[in-house]
Length: 130
Image 1 (tube, rainbow, N blue to C red):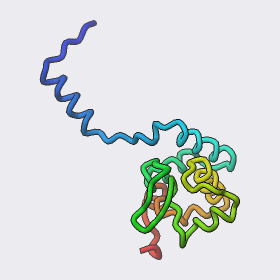
Image 2: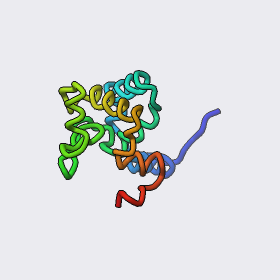
Image 3: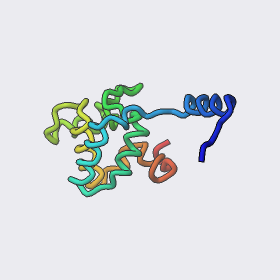
């Protein structure tokens, strides 16, 4: 069966495709693989890691936040960044190291330290956060 689309329909499809936001970093094999390896290694949900990292940095391992947060999971120097280095990690810009550290923290019960865990996974911020 051949479907013939008019010029208007084709232009509408093209216009819609330009409006849909693209998460380029998620298409990056390194970020995807880093999240998969970390989730499997620490027994946490890959989906949770994926959603929290999307919220934190749009899957950009080189993201820098407004208050100096760094990397894929936006580690802060007055937050979990010192623990990242204390755990033996050396490269805050590595998606593998950030994903591994965050998965380890999630497995140990530290997921509530990420605001995006609350907004994306739980669905709301706790009253004490605001």
